[in-house]
Structure formats: C-alpha cells, structure tokens
Image 1 (cartoon, one colour):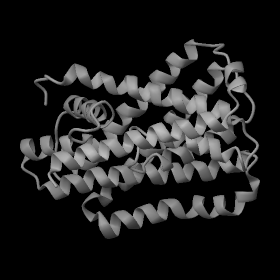
Image 2 (spheres, helix red, strand yellow; image 1 turned 90 degrees about the horizontal axis):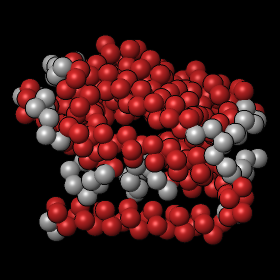
Image 3 (cartoon, helix red, strand yellow; image 1 turned 180 degrees about the horizontal axis):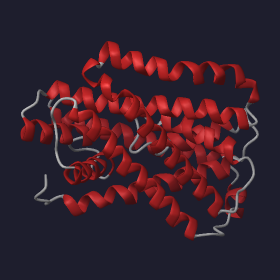
Image 4 (cartoon, one colour; image 1 turned 90 degrees about the vertical axis):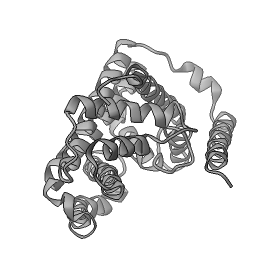
Length: 281
C-alpha cells in the first residue's frame, strides 16, 4: 500500500469518526436546550481568540527552548511562523504532510541535525503539555464539585512534576536542563487555553460551576490527543456528552463551548496561510 493511499485512508477514517460523533451528539442532546443558549457577550469571543493565540505564541517559545538543546536555533520569528504553518498543515490540510513532520523537515534541512533528535524535541514538547494539564486538573479539583476525586488529585499534584522530570532524565536526557523552564511554559499555555474556554462560556452568560466545566475541558484536551479526529473536533464534544451522564453539568453548554473552541483553533490555524510563501522558512 502506497504512502499516499495510507494518508487518504487515515483521512477518511477521521472524517467518518467526526460525522459519527456528531450524529451521536445530535441524537442524544436536547436541541431545544441548545437553542436556548444565547450569545450575550460577543466581545468575549474575541478575548477567547486572543487568549488562545497567546497560548500558541508561548507554545512556540517552549519548543524553541527544547530545540536549543540540540543546536537547532532558528530566530523566534521563524519558529513562530513554522508553528502556525504546522497548525495549518495539521488542521486545514489533514490529508497532507503533518505539522510536526513539516517542522522536523525544515529544521533538519536548515540545521543538519538528525531527524530523530528533532522528533524527540517535538515529542517531549507534547509530553510536557500533557503533564501540565494533569497538574492543573489536580489543582482545580480542590475547588470543584468533584471532591470524590480529591485523594487522586493530591497524588497527581505531588507526583506529576517528579514523573515528568524522570521522563526527561531517563528518556530525553539531552533536554533535561530545560525541564523547569518548559514546564512553567506548559502551565502558562494550558492555563491560557483554559481561560480561552472560560471566555467562551462567559460569552453565553454561563457563570455557574465554571471550574467543573474547565476540568472537563482539560480532560477533553487529553482525549483530543487520540489521532482519530482533526483538531480534536468530535472528541471534545463527546467528552462533555458522556461526562454529563455522570456529573451535574449541562451537556449542551459544554458541547457548544467545546465546538466554538475548535472554531477558534480553526481560524487561528488559518493564519498559517499567510506564511506559505514566507522567505523566513
């Protein structure tokens, strides 16, 4: 089977999953409840967009920090352009070259560093982000209605930084010296994305139990890593749909907010189009 055919099959599977996910969602939610949700403060959606893109700028700073460890030293302007191009390739051209593969190719070409080292930098960058999500979730549980998970939150809060440190030390030794700085970046990135989601909620004048929705949003961010969707669409919404069966949240509100977060991601990714012919990459 050719690589081109494999890519097309993977894309088809993702499209089928997304369509199936939304069929399930439409059949399970109360459409009348969804219609009752009104956009009250549209300017907050602009703030959500700005906050999300701030998180992407800091994400570029984080990967920039990791890459310095292996002597891949583009200017930050180039790094930022490549980051948005990567988002563009991941979401708006999902059947083509992946965003990470594109960045790895450019870095290898310009700095003559082994492909595996660059991929390791991009991988530990993602891992750092995931552990930051676990850490933030464990903190938020103390202030939520999910107190039944308090003991797990305490364990997660204590162990998360240590586990991430040992992952750096044992598997990504060349990036160990950047552990603390990049973990702080990761906490800021995930906090900004959480704030972006909360701005979306507030735009509908939803003010109750925002921490509960925020925790589920962060959980949906972990779920969205599963490579069966495009940009996490469908996965985030399903997380809220099924969470509503076990926790006292409004599924319709969570699903709508999650979908709008994807729309913001999609619009932000389209910024990459501006750099397709950039001389800086």
